[in-house]
Length: 448
Image (cartoon, rainbow, N blue to C red; front, side, top):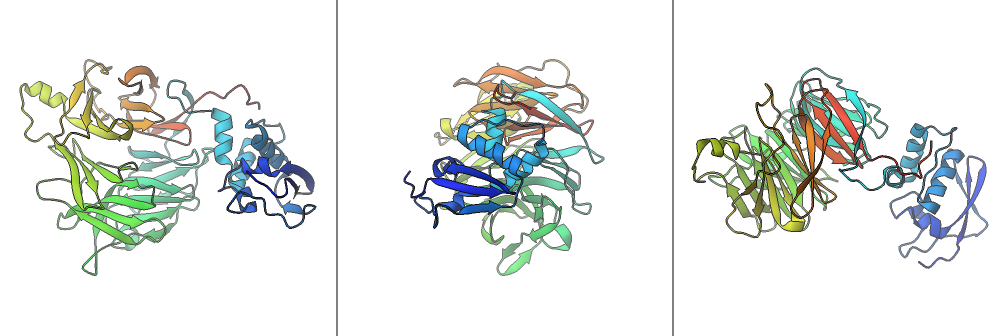
């Protein structure tokens, strides 16, 4: 990296700091310090003796500056973790703090950090990890938002409309899908402030210049700032709507082909490598399972699988094969599915005719199912496969997806949903309305 002026002076809250442009460049382009460089990463300094004044906490600045120098973080007794979190957000260094505190995410090293009791009556609907290490939890018509310090913000209230899904655009904005007439409008999807819980925008569906009422379901987000949602109209029209994240305007809509089930999808997943959308409609919402891959550029379905027409040799075996969740794994060009007994199945995306290759070696829970079972969920993170089953989460690794560890905590009942993000795994229990936070143990460099 070429620099014109390497020494940089800061006056932070009355204290003078000196550092180098090389150190500041470690913060990254999207940080507070990234604005001090031009497009070629040359430092923009009109006067080498000039001090850059920042009206922030100098003790936190000192810790964060050392983090940029060494990649290590040392907390002092006079700096509460909450204060450092706030300052790291200001400078755009929260990712650096998380990396130094927890290291790389490894499902086999996760430890239970804490549990948070539910804040609303009724069963939990969904939990979604936030990009900053926080999360949101949906209970009925309420969404409760937590930041990285797990402090709760103002809840999002949908006025008795049940939440179907939620997704983070960034730490400040959350998209929530629900039934039609969200916030007294005709849309079933809204953009909310995570800090204030306020509705900022309603996403509309238009057809032939007319706004349509719709119920929004599963959500997904693409790398080119698009929002995808399954949609159901009043006359049972189904499809996938597409909106621009920045403007909120509808940019596309894919209507359900005859004989297929798209709009009532349980899960959407955007695939960056192929620029396609995985759409999964699963048991028990439908009597039959439908999994498809949509290419919006070509406006067609490029891969599909359904259990309709699958030969039934044994009725008991057929019931065991009912797919409860699905996830695409682009590195291996395959889709992993799971049934209610946590048997894993795999389908090859390169094959024009989808078929499931089942493996029962993952079965962990034998015998009688609980009175109120929670169906398994899947997640893929950092090359590891995670699958929930009753009150535990299994971790699979390697080319053959070998079971390597289990995360289990009996309090709270079965796990109804879990999510991974911000170097944390969040698991939502159904019976006691509580969620657990699993983290990697701190590395030796971390002191308190």
